[in-house]
Structures are given as structure tokens and as C-alpha cells.
Amino acid sequence: MPPGVTARAAAAGGRYLVQPCTALAGADCGCYLARPLACRRYRCALLAALEAGEVGLPEALAVVAQARQAPASPAREDFLTFHFGRR
Image 1 (cartoon, one colour):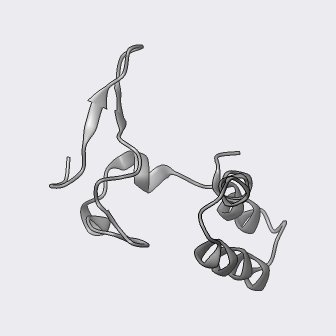
Image 2: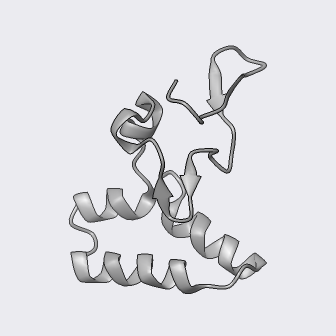
């Protein structure tokens, strides 16, 4: 595990990364080059839609920009879950 990343044992076995990630500094990953395999494999809903050709790059970038500018609120959490949650 890279320095600064905290993992815990899951009740059903295996491990999970504590959220929010302890390596996250603002919008930047503090261990990107040495990030865990789970992070390397993760594809959020927006990335999966982009890779499948369901949305174009300009639309995906607009969603990311909107997410970065949204103030903290339940509506923001719903927006993030919809676009960046796992499919």
C-alpha cells in the first residue's frame, strides 16, 4: 500500500480503502503513480459511458467541471453518485 493510503479489513474478508481517500489532496491523488490496483481498475459511470461512446469528451469534461464547482449539499452528493458512482 502506498504511503498515506489507509486500508481496513472488511467483515466479509479482503480489504477496502477508507473514504475519503487519505491520499486525496483537493482533486489530486497524492500517490497516483503508485496507486493501489483497485484504484487503477476503477471505472466510474462517466468514464464507462465515455469509453462506450455514450457521451462525448466535451460532455464528460463539462460534467467534471460542474462537479468541481458544485457547493457541498445533498444535491451535489446525488450528482456525484449518478455520474461518478460505479455502473
